[in-house]
Amino acid sequence: MWIIASRESRLAMWQAEHVQNLLAKACGTSVEILGMTTRGDQILDRTLSKVGGKGLFVKELETALEEGKAHLAVHSLKDVPMELPEGFELACVMAREDPRDAFVSNEFPSLEALPNGAIVGTSSLRREAQLKARFPFLKIVPLRGNLDTRLSKLDRGDMQAIILAAAGLKRLGLAQRIRQVIAPDVLLPAAGQGALGIEIRTDGDAIRRALVPLADDKTFREVRAERAVSRALGGSCQVPLAAYCVQEPDGKTLRLRALVAMTDGTRVLRAECVGVDPEALGLEAAKELSDQGAQAILHALGVA
Image (cartoon, rainbow, N blue to C red; front, side, top):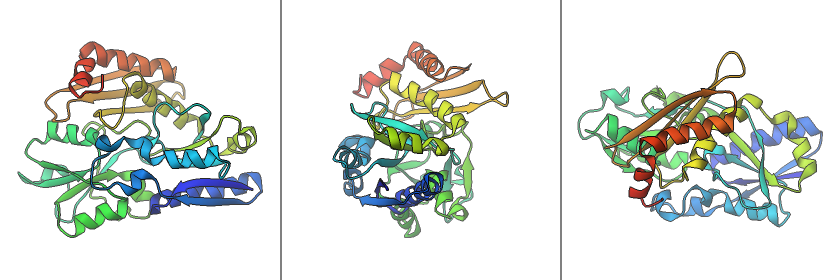
């Protein structure tokens, strides 16, 4: 029997149940879910950048793995820190859902239709910086909580629109709430957005073998390039950093776009690279951004 450690939010449980069903079918054994509440779920009055970053969503799950209470942990890959603690590994990346951001509003059909001063809620500095750069007339406000909590804040009129990951809405059957799927040219996604990552202990040989049928090589290559950019630049919740890679039709070539920005949107640096080696491509994009002045931005943000 395998045990999956998962956060208890509705989206996290959907993800865990999705893996549960696939893994049970692949290995022919029972799979259970251990639901847990993380510090990231508990602290809702401050932005992630001020309370320790996305690692707050995975620490308790890693503790369950370390103590032998679970064999694997299912994460939204964009929430997984670029460097895992010693003794843990990202054993499987599954096929990616839509990696783009989604515009959700009860009043307006698109970002472009929002009036001056409209209030837009978002949980990430990445989105905030890009929105401020392209739509300086909007008022961007922090939005924490699980997906249902964020939607309820919109529905009670706290803001005119919110930006969410399209993948989460689609996975929970809420695609009808999406008024506009935002093109990467407008909002470049976060590294790993839309992909599920499965973390195990490095000594978990049996579960590593069991996860092989769930892995998707195309997605893994794309997200390796994306995460390499973020790793090279020290990406965290304190940094408005985006990275989005797609595999070209030839099945080998990767096209990677990356971005680093000031939180207020006054400076946005962009890079685009093409290659076949994911790690090398990520480092190339990071170097392009550094050559343009990324380190100065990181220093200004207090993370370099």
